[in-house]
Amino acid sequence: MQRFDEGPATVPVRLGDRSYDVEVADGGWDRLPGRLRAALDRSWAGRGCRKALILTDDHVAALPYPGLVRDALETLGIETVQTVVPHGEASKGLATAASLYDRLVALAADRHTLVAAVGGGVIGDLGGFVAATFARGLPLFMVPTTLLAQVDSSVGGKVGVNLPKVKNLVGAFHQPIAVWVDVATLNDLPDRELRCGLAEVVKYGVILDAPFFETLEDDVDAILAKRPASLRRIVARSCELKATVVSEDEREETGLRAMLNFGHTIGHAVEATAGYGGAFQHGEAVAVGMVAESRLAERLGWVDAAFTNRLVRLLERFGLPTSLRGLAPRPLLESMGRDKKNKGGRIRLVLPRRLGSVELTDAAGVDDLRALLEDLCRPDAP
Ligand code: NAD
Ligand code: GLY
Image (cartoon, rainbow, N blue to C red; front, top):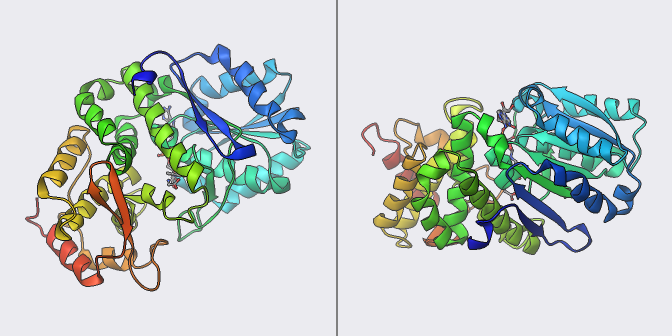
């Protein structure tokens, strides 16, 4: 953490010949052309890049960032076209992807054409999916502008779109050539979106880094006040932690990357049950999911109540929900039964052992989960 205190940070994601850097700065766009040139020059596709499609949404299009990316690309002699899609999850589908393929055809795109995704996780996932699939793979440059995208979705190469009834079911692993984070983008971000990203930041502390969790406890006010040094620190450390996991288990095969799903099994069920875009946004659902999963770990004797209460306090200070009160337990349990981590008919969850350490386990049976959810969903539950 100390080393992220001064100025911009470069976080490497080590994946052999697909390695790349995540640059985390506050402004500093004059450095972008040089960084981008170096990133492009690392691959055959990038070296021949003459054209780029800049993808953004209508909210972000009104901000300076797509224009700053265009200027950097044009400084490098790369011709750009910009495509703006409506904001929101509805754009992350096959119909929008098809319209982007048409746009690339009209641009006479070839395998050197860069896709620059400037926006939140929707734009990153959609632009990444199009980059992964058009002409069997185009170079991808990520400029995440929400906290969630900066600490999670822009790093690690998971890209994809939603089907009408199932989120994120169609996708690929396609690593970007570079990720450029300007924490000043967060100044425009609505508070609720910032809080959603903070749930993922807290998650990294719980699963991998107890000292990081403690610095979050010390720094709540500065983070909520969007102090650039604090934002840079939490983004850089979160990316570093995610990069370590992704470098060791890029394709989620060994169980290591699955740890990033702490809070997400119950969280996804909450999100799906409450309806996407409804009462719980993703980060809010993850926050209540982390608390519920920690309560489950208590029942297994893995952590004590003080552990969960400490997590609750931090999430509440960040303005995040922590209770399942009033939700219906049955649909939650049914939804968890469809989780991608399940194996051999057993529900698998990531549960905490202690601060900074979690384990993927099927130690809790359906009866344990039913009893937990019935308890936590009671109208008088805390
Ligand atoms: P989002 O992209 O919908 O952005 C949220 C809102 O913020 C949108 O209205 C957007 O227009 C607006 N916005 C973006 N940047 C802004 C800025 N700087 N100032 C003001 N407004 C801004 O949502 P998100 O929360 O960033 O991402 C959610 C998506 O990410 C989901 O589709 C989820 O599935 C995906 N995701 C992917 C991964 C992964 O590993 N690929 C991980 C986590 C989440
Ligand atoms: N967001 C979880 C992952 O990237 O694996």
